[in-house]
Length: 354
Ligand SMILES: CC(=O)N[C@H]1[C@@H](OP(=O)(O)OP(=O)(O)OC[C@H]2O[C@@H](n3ccc(=O)[nH]c3=O)[C@H](O)[C@@H]2O)O[C@H](CO)[C@@H](O)[C@@H]1O
Image (cartoon, rainbow, N blue to C red):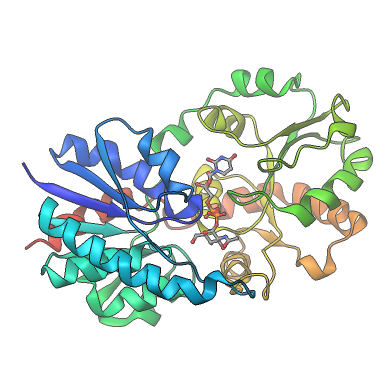
């Protein structure tokens, strides 16, 4: 039986593409192992998947702020590299697929020490630090954006992102009933990243009286971000996070307001939903979301509102304009290259082993 090690973590964006690949890898007869951290978002998500062996290793984190852990993390990364190398020797996989994120670095290095072929995937328009560090040890690179494949050079190819097939099979009526909406008004879905989006949450809440004149608003606000005062507001439903119900809610969504995390973007793109994006600002992050959003905007696939220009008034105005342009946006999305990279990534997983 062939064996594959999957790795990646930190936020959910480094995890959901694996969920798209796992059923197909099982069909292809792979024994599947996942190497992640003890406490990252990948741990509960992957431990819940049947038929996968989860291995936790030590890992560091790149922080853009002062934290005492910045001094201890390099030692954790080194410890993680030794743990990963040992695991590679024990599991002896035929191939490793890495989605990036800080946990992937020691795993990819460990694979290289054992001469195990590695396919890395980068979701953003520019390679993240973890993937840059992994580059010398990777056999091939798959990317979501053409700009990123170009930046990574000969090893890289634009494939799109593996997307979970269940996202395309939601039930509109179930979605409406879950949200408590009657389907009379168009549904506006606000989705932050996997950890929510505090400033967009606050701005959206101020705009709710105006927005609910035209839309029913479903608001995925992130864990711990519910606003008790707004519970029961007609036409407004807050949800911390959606798991199995996400496809149904997507099926009843007419318009999307979102951060510009690469995976969410590809999902909305593949579903053909008109979107207004408010990318996570530079400084708070490496600015990749601004580049992701601008790349789509340049191709006429979305509208963008920068956070520095975001007020409840500009948000309402931009949402109305995006709604007015919905037919053009949907048509452009329909004509864009397919965002789902599942098939090509599976082919590359085979190719790197030859
Ligand atoms: C703050 C930060 O550093 N964000 C980065 C992180 O995004 P982050 O992981 O937050 O966001 P992404 O949009 O890439 O992925 C979120 C994933 O979570 C899923 N989801 C979300 C909400 C929910 O209720 N249920 C659910 O299943 C989405 O469908 C999607 O698959 O990784 C992305 C990919 O490298 C980057 O582009 C982002 O800049």
